[in-house]
Length: 462
Image (cartoon, rainbow, N blue to C red; front, side, top):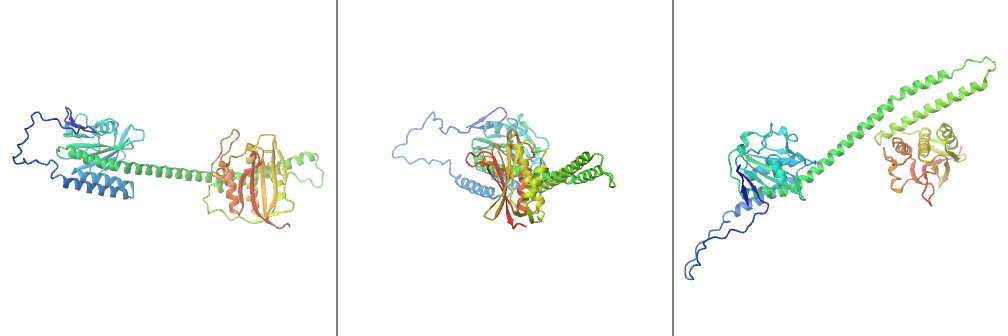
């Protein structure tokens, strides 16, 4: 039932009472032999119109469901609505996710530059009130309506004479408001309201699902852009580290220079030996930083463009000894047990294999409590060489044993620290030379501790 307020606006109740008021003076029944009185059919002549409306709704749904882009869908909605109601302009407002404003999503006669910019407060103006009350509204004379909210830059007076607005509701939630406007006064009636509501009801779900899909695609694009920017930044920073590392190496060599003894004995051979040890230790750490830079660059490099690994036979035992010596300052709070393969070589890139083992040892130091043992073992299983690094830490849950190899993935623990790219870089380096890297419990029975295993092709002993 339409209710008319003092402004001439009509608000249509969602469920009008279909029971007509009884006539006060009903005519008497006709005589049995009297001829029947013709009864006019109020629906006569409206059937073709209803068929046209159904046909139009079918066409609009077909166009809306086959739209390839968001803009195409929005254009279909407003153009179809305008044509269906014989209006001058149609516009669609969507409720923002915070529920405070409605933003213009599409229009076919107003200022298209305002799409995505023009906003109407929730419960403000005609559009806002329709959204708040979920009730269709007719404004017979828009310029004289004191509550009509004129939006600067969009509402053009030549298009605003009469107006019909209906809410878009999907799953009992307001999605937006669909408006039609005319440039000449028009008396919208209940059939116009029903027609526009039918369009709105059919389009609400399509519009909202397309909106959710577009938002998901936008978020994905933003995440990809952030990931790309982060990769470029890390690659730039690590590349710029090359020069200062080379300078530090040069100055370290200069500081280690000693005057020639010329056949004389040193007056302080212990001090001289100590300085040589410091020099060698400093160079070892510089080389380690250089390898870390390589690992970081590899971790952000797109898959498929890795540098070709220099595969050669590598003696595992001296390599592990070098790594333990280099990382001695990090291992001072842990016990280290080494059980390397004797006279066994693997086919690998020596520099990259060293980087992998260093990452695994550093990871064990991070998660294993001080005073526990870190075990490095080399063995041969069915012709495949395996190098493992095990610790006595809390272990890795089964659901994390693959995820920890993802870039920037780091499980929250009290001892965790770092950037989360070490294991990812280690796996990338392993894959570049045909090695496999995985994680398993150090103690299969209790599930405690962590063991990382690198599997490589074995070579004949030299």
